Length: 465
Image (tube, rainbow, N blue to C red; front, top):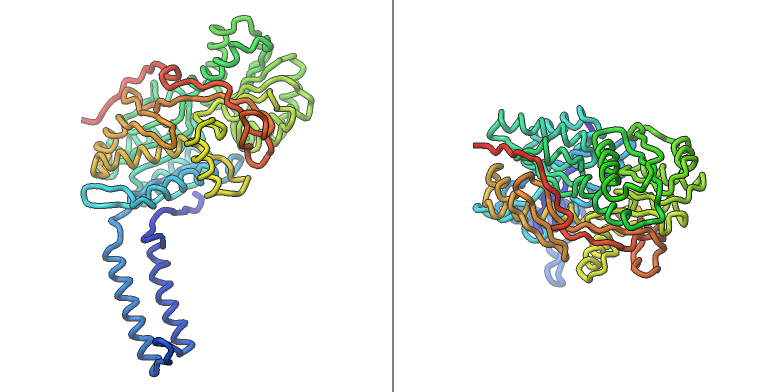
């Protein structure tokens, strides 16, 4: 398992250990120079004065520790931080770290016994199920009370199963799973769990939002379906076929293909088939490098059709396709930087101030809502008891920078509005902000309110007695 990185445990803006060591180092440095000043007069007997100063510093540090926050609430992020999708894992960590910082800056989480800081620790799953389960065991041994993961529905399914079994077996160390991106619909349907909460719209919800645009796009009469060969990719193509049959039965599916996840380095053979098929649009749930390399190869072979995507608005995809994507790359999301409201713009500007590098420009509103929902639920529960917190999470309703959402208790699927955007040059109407310094951004062309985005569930929730 990869190295762990911890963020979030601070006292007055300074880490505990850093605060103490800085004071001691200052006293040692003063002793080395053997010169002290009181007003404008040099103080004699510097060594005695140093010892007094050091004693006073240690006493002050002791007082600081006595007044330090109560034990932290530990969150484990289990994510692929190495391998083909390492960049997406790092992007998630920035989002979660920012959210944790914000909670701690306002004093942490206020429980019945006082305020507790949040501590976020990251564990590298390498995107593999066994590694994710190993990371889960390590996180629990390290005292994690909450697990966050999302960049693989296969990993999420493994974690849901393992956490359910662990929580039945070890009542004193139960954990709650907060999912920010694993969107296989089965996770809040047949595989729903009392211990799992999803804060992203699932694949069927996202597909319905895309179809709300495609159903009116009469220029598209043939499509090519392509996806990653695992549970999520398969679910996307299955739902695309179903919804096309209902909403656009006139559209011909000229290709339907799955490819190995994270292992294709050259998509030229795939896009050559796409171009030869005569498809006027591609529908894909690809993410990370599997999307970036796909659209880059499409540009290289001169494919001039559209891309209806789940994640085409970030992680290098706009820059990779360039001008060829203007008006042709469509993406669905819970939020986009060019949502035209003052709170939305303030939110995006705040993120860019915290992470000013263009390469770090990958912000998710839902991850902020997720951490806010957790903090809210902890405070309403007044305790970290897992059942009490989960019961509050079931009824969580949060608002943040104008974005609202609520958790549906029946299946633990978060309900929020969705938006669909189309790629254009920065500076074009509705495109104030670009993506990753690429010069291209996404103009919002459709907003689907939460009530319309909501879908029925087949979940039969089993709650602990």
